Length: 284
Image (cartoon, rainbow, N blue to C red; front, side, top):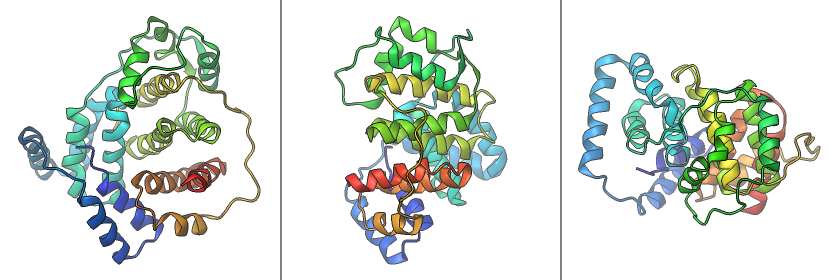
């Protein structure tokens, strides 16, 4: 269920790729896919039946809200795939996307004790917190996050931010990516975009869950330094140039990051996401 094909095709289409390029990428990517297990086919079929019976809006509210505590599941993959399915305007991938989220369900447990005034305060405190190791000995994003949340010190960072908004987290994700170019952080950038897309259907505390997941992911990569006051560069390639550069790429994460950054830039206008997209492509 870690199939990125539908997401990459949405990104390619929105970035202006031709139909020929979409077919070319689909043919390339399909070669790596394997058949789904029968249990997941059954779950997807059930979701498809519910979608047909309830209609899109009711189905999404009923199906997405209970998954909110598990935003981080499978390195945010279920969240992001579901958001891309919704963003596409086509319901065809919704059952499989929700199945991917559902079968990988991994909840980060609550602890309500307000300790931090803002998200940046929490991240800067985590940066200085030597109770967390710099390395976790696993290449799995989800596995590393689970190791972080098992550390007793992480209780200090569970649901403890007083003044929190999704935009605060989106900016931190972009700043972290600009400081590191890290693959885990790439998922934080796209997860912030995905949360914004799905916010009408997620539970009311979705941003709190995302903050906890992002703090755990940040700890999992060694709490790197980042510039919280970074100013955008003035000589950035424009979005048309970035799109032209990424459309030929066969890396689904290049495609998703550039599209998500484009959408986040439209929302916030900081030019930090434009810098992040340019950084990713400069390293490609």
